[in-house]
Image (cartoon, rainbow, N blue to C red; front, top):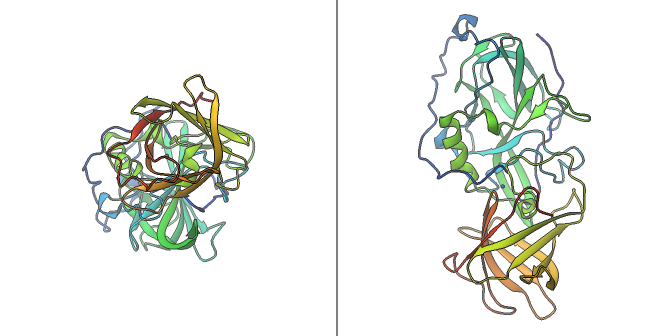
Length: 343
């Protein structure tokens, strides 16, 4: 056994990664009874050289996206600025249980490094000589059957996701969340959380279905420039991302620049087909607006009001002319695409 102190980052100021998720599924993650036997004999012997397989650490009935839904691996924000996010922050229904993503043995139960009075649980997964750990932070309570060196099975409740009150944009919001992290001990990078890797490649089919349900509804301000579920933790700022039209009658391209890894402020350029900038200004986002997120491009002649949705490399954007009313929905939206190699 090894005890690893993993500095975690919780979230969040105002507030998508990976390729475009598949069509969301209504598959519900199975709930494991709390009376699960914790004897080490309940852990299935690993296949030598096997790769970790994980479910999402949330039951399908506990999915909510009132605040943000899911914050991706590697993104930069107020609490994830220099090092980049070392896992996923997942929003839960208030009072919901965080669940083990895979069978394993509890390596440590420790005070959370960020939030006073909260707890972090680390579970070790030994697959032959290959060691992984999953980390579950910002837990407000731990179930009594979760003990150090005790075995857990996939889907077993670990504890309650902690409640957070934060200001997103200018709006106070109360939500429950847990930081979920995968550490691969054959991986190393310099800096904080050197073993942390993106959880996405390890998802089972059922895990992917739950993930897609969350990801397609997630929203956070930084996704204009960091939209993928797995972003580079070493990103340098200012950061610019270009979105080019795929269908519709909107502008040929839009370029967004975020000057700081700490904030979520953006500047924009409207691009002609040639790539020439024909308009510029500041961006104002409403990421708590439902059912459609709002975007205002602030120009000297008046704001261009719009509604939008981003999922991975695709943005749907319905944008009005300067001074015109905001479109009511995405029915007239143009579709834009970006790529990880896009400047």
